[in-house]
Image 1 (cartoon, rainbow, N blue to C red):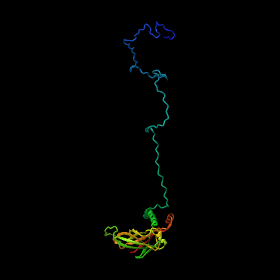
Image 2: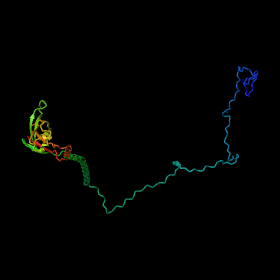
Image 3: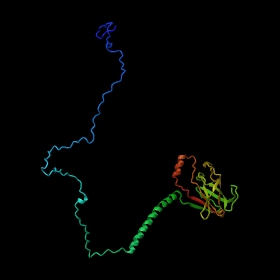
Image 4: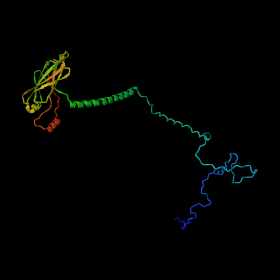
Length: 309
């Protein structure tokens, strides 16, 4: 059962609490036209030219009556301090500065003679000294490095000491006796001979004279030379010298063969230059001792045998 908000029980035959009143029609749908809203007047906008702009009214000091007093100027503003300069036209002209005068020349000494002009011989002497100094500087700049390089070359490769050996004789150096023979041969490569060159064969025989000569079994350097000083290299073809110092016997000759080519015009006069090796093969010597001996040795490879023909 439905109760009222106050807890009362409504009448069964009476009107419900939420029911509309009896005088209100049940169909409240409006089928007619809606009424138009009342027009609202737009805000008033002043029309240009119709309103008078308010004017400035002087409040203090009060205006003077018309016709009283002719001077209506106001009090001028005080002058302000500024760094501005007046225009050039309004600036005053600077005072004229007198031009400096040259100092007066000192009075001439009646005792001292006037300076004499430089004599031509003195000028020539000074010019010669300048030229000589320039030439000396150039010579020192160019010649000093050359002289130093030549000194280093001479130290590393000193001038040869040539020992001349007559034909058929033996030359002795470093406890070794050397003999040399030269003969003409054909081209060992099998090519046909030409008219501008000649092959030569050198046979060099070495013989150790003592134990020191036996350990000096290094290969010598052999070249051909003529009277004009030209040289041609000879290449080894065969060497019978034992590679071990223990196998070299004192008094036993060991044969070496070399070949070279020279101009045909020098084939009959070409002589042999033999430069022995300074290598010493000491038996049972350690590698460290061999290196120390090589660096501490003062012997130079400047001894040469020249075999005449």
